[in-house]
Image 1 (cartoon, rainbow, N blue to C red):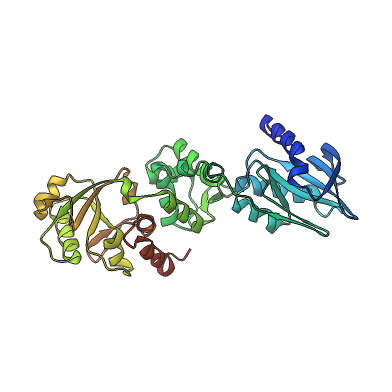
Image 2: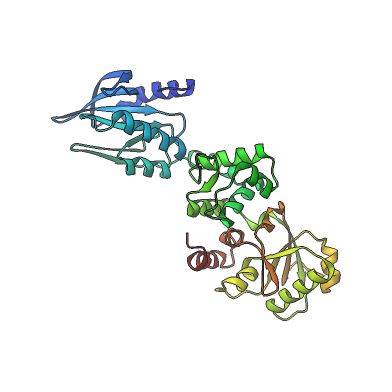
Length: 352
């Protein structure tokens, strides 16, 4: 059933475009708000013929093709249409992404969006079409989900993978207001990364895609960086001195990129150490006798634009290292063999 003015407009556009979207079918006898034999109603019921084969197509229209909407619509279509002979259910939205397409196909429900992406399979008919997707349609809202506040939620859920957590506890753990946490979770849920159980607790249901999409939207270079040179002869000795200075002078830090990976899952050789720190550069310069430089740096201090980067950091051989999900996303777009190290990390430790 149509629930918003926007869906009425989408239905009107669907009716106008059907001959173009499904050119190989002869379509007729269109009925809005059609009642089915088992009592269910669908937004549009259309008679379709292909050669000598006839059936009815039941279209249910939604204003969004996000995975949560797709799952709910598929469930309704299966309930309404069920095994009704001669009726084939189809989910319709302006744009239907890959995850929602999979949801439909696994449930035996067709899909059709206004861009032309389609999958319908009944009798002798198979329509399986993917069209080039405008960047705006495929990425709308993605960066919004992975704002600093959004990444706090994503980071927490990936560090504590498998946990069910209430919005209140999630907000407290991530340093957000309950309203802010709710908005982020709602965006993650709409995109099919998480779901909420009957008690409204949040749980990740697609860790792999959440991590990949976060990494795609993230860059360690967004953090302000300062380049320094130290006389220490190796990255290992630099890390040791950083850890000692942190303990002696109370300087917060967490190692990332190749330096962090070298302590938990080494794969690529490296020459410089990158650390997140909230301490003033001058404190580190004094503690480690650093020299500022424009080139040839072997220690890079990152001033994080959000303190969430420290969540899940742990001590490894006396050195503080960012969480494994944070390490992965930092490495993912880092040019100096970062993706290679990230892939190794995912294969051997993360495994989703």
